[in-house]
Image 1 (tube, rainbow over the protein chains, first blue to last red):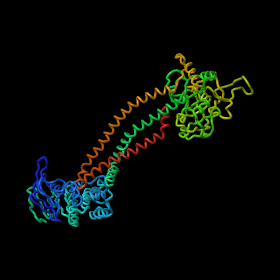
Image 2: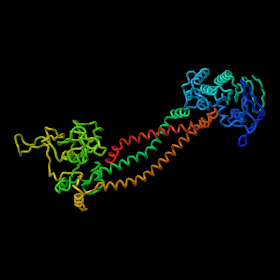
Image 3: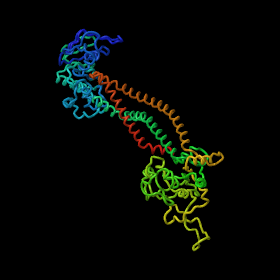
Image 4: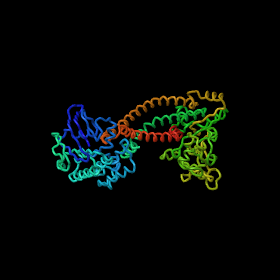
Length: 224
Length: 385
């Protein structure tokens, strides 16, 4: 469970402030975050991931208060329990699809890249339709395939929560649906919570709940 | 290991950039070392050979040209002196004159016409074959033999001096009878012949068909343009070779002089002090000391230039690496968001720099060792140029 309480965040420049009195995400819940640009959707993801810390208030993942941790602890928690999917995929051009999926194992503290991890990456890739593509580099893959690789990278460490920042924003309609299907299926398989920022209102009915940042209210509790 | 793997993957993917960076860095590292090695070797070679050569006699003019030609068989040659000078020294009994005629070349190597005393004086030993004994025979320096892949039983042809001079020097095919043991000096780069053979190449001596009328033993010379002039000296035609003119007038490029003792050296030097005398006596040690002094003064300047250029190149390499880091900002942000440790990101960047420096170091070391191994040959070639 993720709990946000009396959260307030302001950038040092002071031209943006985000205030969230209370927000709770249940394990396995699929939640969409919508709203105009500049309202703090990505900032919310960064706060939950511990990339930035709130000015006041708390962010809690299970029993652990992320906002109270030091930088090293937040990084370790992020590596072990949070998966990130980016709009621009953020794949490393010089690594093969397989090595991109295994990237978190190479950079995270305490992660061990062993045969089990490799087998898990292969299985995950196969379940995302990347069977014959693992030896290819991102430049040799289609956009849809690249986002599948990014999705596998987000899931390979078995995170408790997957944060998707406009994950389907760069994709054509067919790939949008396919990636969202995979995102839902794989997070459900792993029992992970999904918090997805999206501008695509056609996809909203598929989420359990929608958080609207334009008014910061939760209009469709259990919308799906 | 992970940082190393990622850095290697990155460098392999951007291989062209990596190769350029590695090579440029290797050059920056190796150029000052190579110049230092070559300068030290040059100094040693110059000084050593000069100190082992007591006196040089040659025509008046640049002392340096005379010595560089006599010691290193360089291309810069003063006007030749005559064999009469050799005879004068012989007659004085004050020292041993060793004539050198370095006017010709073959396959990029200098042909050195000299007397047998030269080999004893320089301590040159025949490693393969035998010493020259007859007109038209040649002894190869070790490097020339290796470079041309020739040995006893093969031949080399002297290079014509001017293709369009019909009256000039004709090529002479020389019979190789031996190869000298390597010495790491200019002798390795030379082809030695008897001084008389060098005069045959010069056209002063030659051999040809009989020119007497049939049945005549003297007189009745019937020479014509159809007479064949021999361009190779063989057992069958060696007796027909003869010289024209006064032997005292035959040219030599320089004469190495080995005086009997210090007193003889002083007397000999005194005989050539007159600035009006077209012949001069030089002491290689003194001339080379002046040259080395000048080289090292120039080297100080070169060191400063190398330092500035090297510094600028290092800054350029540093800038290229820095720009790489800038280009990888997105990648570092992704790593950070995924949860990479701060030390991991630093290691990732450092690994790339370390790999580039390591590869450059290995290449620079290889170049330096190669230069060090071939240093003597390179210096001999540089000095002969």
